[in-house]
Image (tube, rainbow, N blue to C red; front, side):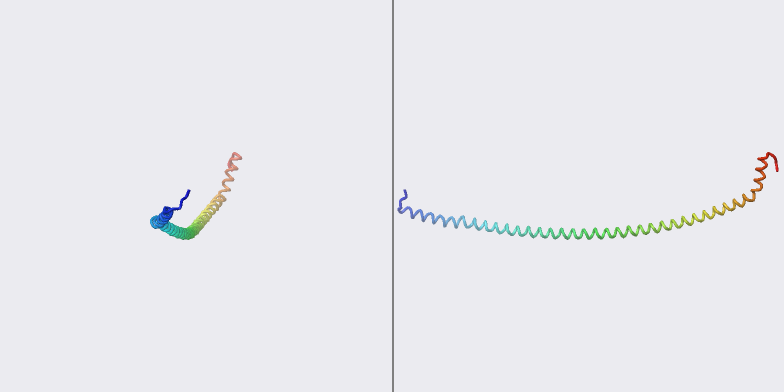
Length: 141
């Protein structure tokens, strides 16, 4: 059973004193440390968000520069390819023209040789005919 005597107020005072001392010695420093830790964590989270935003921004800038460089390289490649094709087409056309000229010259020479052979053979047709007739008949004509 509980008896109310002088020890009860002493215990109450002892508990109040203990609350004040523990509050001053233990609870306030722990709360202060927890508040500081929470503030540091908040600051670090803000820094991480800032760094992530900067990283995304730099990645986007890098991608944009990369796309621009790729576009520029493709344009230069297309220009060089078109120039090479034009030069190749021009060179091919020159070669075709030269071969056409050489072909025409050879055809002209061949035609002249054929006409000369025809003229030579026309002059010899009568002698060939006489010779053949002699051979066919078996006697000289």
